[in-house]
Image 1 (tube, one colour):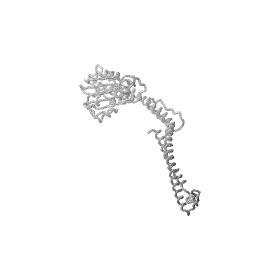
Image 2 (cartoon, helix red, strand yellow):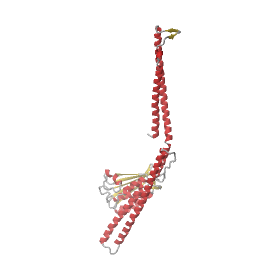
Image 3 (tube, one colour):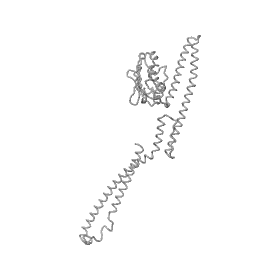
Length: 382
């Protein structure tokens, strides 16, 4: 229940309770008022049809009984009217109090709705530079808005610091790796290099390349966790076709057949990040496969979402370990994620990029072996 509804119900309930108590008390007072006082219970005489009778006459007792009977009927009728009219008035008042409480709550919560709308705009736009900047009177709402602005400001500074750190760290880490790759490549290509030196150099180049991919993966993972501010419309199918064309050579070397069923899938976001998402899915499907294996890639558009599905053959994946493959550096117990060419970040990057675009990622194991990964992104109207 909303706050307005609860406040309206509270106002109506309190009015109902108070009204019932007031009507009950009023009925009690009226009943007490209609009771005869001691001096009037047995009068000195009774006048009937112009004749006066004292307590010694029989007509006195008959008249007294009739008066008592009339008094009881009048008293009961009066009490019933008090209860009926009073109860009706109470229920009408309770209804009016509920409506008034609803309107009053709407008016009182208007500043809260303004703060909520501003906070929602900041959350949906992923722009941490925005602020609520509530300009109303000092009070609980302004205090809450100022606290939210403070938290958003701290988050913005934290994310900015994180981005700068990642950029600096990636640069500092790439530089020595580039130098190492150059030195090893020069040493291997020397005319007097022995076979042992060449084999060692090739191993070092493989290790160096893996470290470079690891750094690139960490950088992409960090960038994917950031909000996508510059959303540009593009067709997911074009990105998938480009990635599949690039992956064709590796698939041929590994004797993996790629089947594509690509329908138009318009979406919006950062094409470079989405390309990395598709590339990771296709590379995983090819590299974590077996000889004469197959990969199926499809795109389609439905309702307000576009969908990318990548399925491949391979070793069976236990159902209880499906979720772990999306965690960084988590590997399955089998050989599926133990490829020497993997960094353990591929599907982690897929998830964060999809979530940064307002999408979702789900995976399921195939009964024949292998995995099916489905990515859904918001659809962009053409």
